[in-house]
Image 1 (cartoon, rainbow, N blue to C red):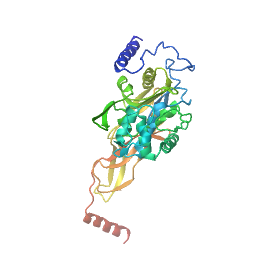
Image 2 (spheres, one colour):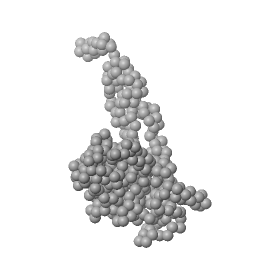
Image 3 (cartoon, rainbow, N blue to C red):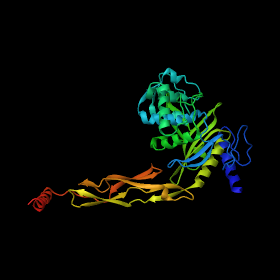
Image 4 (cartoon, rainbow, N blue to C red):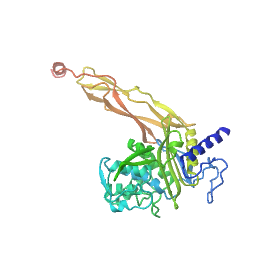
Length: 395
């Protein structure tokens, strides 16, 4: 108990120093916010969010939930999906010309000027670190021609990921009665984002400089997601606030190979809530090595090789998150490799993959590589082999 109080006091001091915007206080003994109903049996009654979830990103296993399927306005956490669509449909080195529409977008901004030219990647950093609504409009228009068309792509992608209770009508998260999501849907969307290394690189960046028209020194961006400073292992993802949505925060943290996603929507103390939820989540799972590095998993034939057989081994180890009380039987292994290859083969060549599946979905994988080199037989050796075959089976 004493250690817990010291932990939250330490966080409060850091928060004050960083000028977070509202005081971090102990999650124990907080007054219940007006209108908040804590469900009976809630594992974290001190959480002040109206909707919340903690999810293991790899398996989709829910570790904590409160009203996770209730619809809420997502505010700027919307930009998580904006980033996903931008990365999948845009080119990072494209030069984008800022339109009048983008340059006059309301709300938070990175002060884009109509006619200004910006690299596409810099716009992505601007919208994710300091929540530039103008940057999201410039990105949307560049990718899809209009914000409406881009928002349609966002909604379609959300539904394809299983986030079927989500509807996007803009790229920024500005309030609209037709623009909504759920805590669970936002967790699904964020977890998908982490499959793309560039997504993680952007959302985990604390500070950077990007070019600025008429300012050769550039403009400094400092990530508004203070969890990157407050929480050990935090590697994203996005804050959000409007009067209609309240305080929203999607946080990601990775420890011992376990990637967790936490979501709080309409929260009074979103930093406290997220810290408590992630702490709880990491207490529910443990990493287990399912596959070791350099493990031989398959032997295949080699056509025209000096050796007839070739062993395939794993390139990396695979660790999976196991809930306490469960075991590795929840996970299955699938070898995706040919039965036969042609020489020559070089040691380390990638021949296939070992897939780990959970409830039928791929959650991890590693390459299968050649354990040895196999040289191709010489022309005369192949000719001799052919003659031997001819006499043995024809004459």
